[in-house]
Amino acid sequence: MAIGALLINSRIAAFKKRSEELLNYQYPLLVRNYRSILDYDSWLDCSDIFELSKSKITGRNGKLKGCLTAEDKERVMKFLKETDIFDNATKKRYGII
Image (cartoon, rainbow, N blue to C red; front, side, top):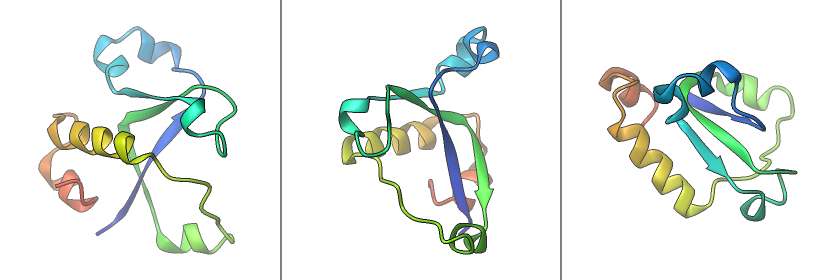
């Protein structure tokens, strides 16, 4: 299985705001739930998955900054399973299905 990552943005990009479809792929992350990693309410961009190699994560002395709450993780995974923005091959590659 490959390692996939979603980006956290402090603001939704203007071009995504102009597209209702892309706007629907933005998941809110509230600072009150993520005080150790966020300074303000942010957005998890579920419209694109970025592949990371294990060496890229571990080779730079990477540290775990935090994790999604159980509730947010469940909601995001449910959304990623049900969305049609990614085909089943992509979902399988990243362990979504």
